[in-house]
Image (cartoon, rainbow, N blue to C red; front, side):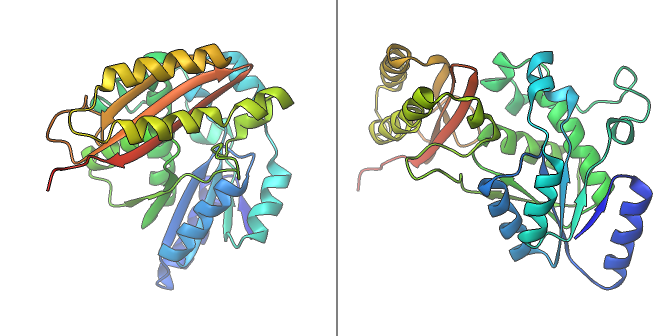
Length: 285
């Protein structure tokens, strides 16, 4: 596996692959590679002949300076894991490469409708930073496809909206959430959990599963279900920021929805956990 950090070296390698007729896939990450990331690489390999994985801890998508500073940076271990799973190239750019005029003078991508609720309310500026860096990575690599995990359901929706609105010629592929055996969604932030918190953490996904079952009826009392699980999680030791139903496009649920998703973000100690459960709306036969 090759490793590059600058645009010139990246483009030289990509040009050679394109000249040979290769199909290029991109997996954007912030590093601290775990099994969930490796599943994204596997998916990219199924859709492309060459896989580029980026590792960049993007400062503009953190709404708190302390969160950015403590985010785990494990580049050497990441490189070893990615080489072992068949990635072809690791792109590990510096902040100067990604923001050549500095953060204060950077040009930003400002996503709209899908970025406003949920995470948009609790993490101001997060999606602007994420959309900006993803657009930059897509411009740098110019892949045929890019792969994202569905654990970050809203992020995936925002990326698809940005690609659609900016007319970017790339296929966006979503990969189902990778979970621990007890149901906890894999995340780099899980390492912030204490042993006691880690034992409690799977209750978030269990609540989402229960809410999805109860919310599948067309006339289900969604607000009451949201309130019940919010209260139960808070009493269990979580600090819930949101626990909400949306339709598949993240608009408020409507009677005609065929599919919905229930999404949650909750603090457990120093870890902020996010998760979701998509589901079909039952219809009378």
